[in-house]
Image (cartoon, rainbow, N blue to C red; front, side, top):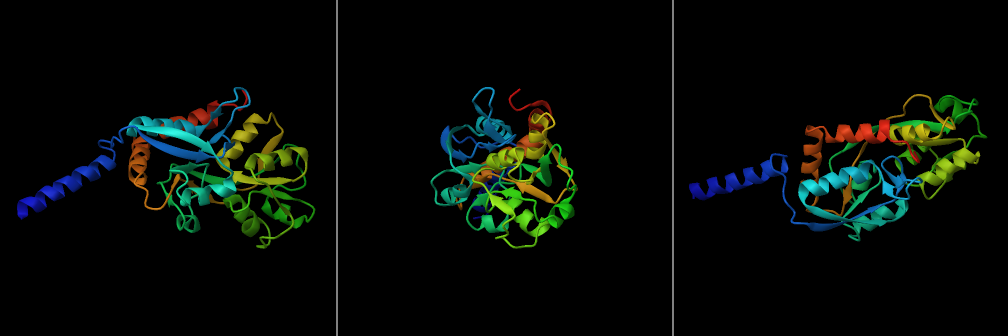
Length: 263
């Protein structure tokens, strides 16, 4: 009995070590269907110069696929349908800069965080009517773009405005990119976004956009899975491995410092 118990402990320890990054599990080429929005640069978007879907998350998942021996198949869906679709098992995994939150974790499982970002205020480059959240809130003529159900939407409602989710000053858009386009054309005056995506848009705007005010909080991004998915543990192991060997830092440099959208 002691020998059996000892052998079992050894097997459990070996499995734990494999998932801790010592030797990553081999998933035998398993097909993993990943859904994304392709509307959140520089994490994932369609590059106007090449027409290809590219971004930080694509490169990260390609690296994960190589380390775990999986075959990734991509599908597209709108943000407002993504969490429900993954929760229902229509896809194996979802990615689009998804903030890890308790209410979402009731519907899907999250990977460990692969990135931490801070919420910023993205405005037109010539904006001079306000320079912080209080200034925006004080001018009833100013409008904000947001996607329903997203972290920027809730930050806008509760941290910038009056806590009324039906506030008419919040104009809803199906995609983040559509909100940014509305900002460019003057249909809205503010887009809240995480600092990484905001920096990407500013870099690509040639002075057309800028970030103002103080950061409004931090958020952790994770991949999503159907509840009790067996993919969570190996994906977490690969993320830990990539953090430890500097791969995630290298991706940050590539996509947030070196890459220019459309360049």
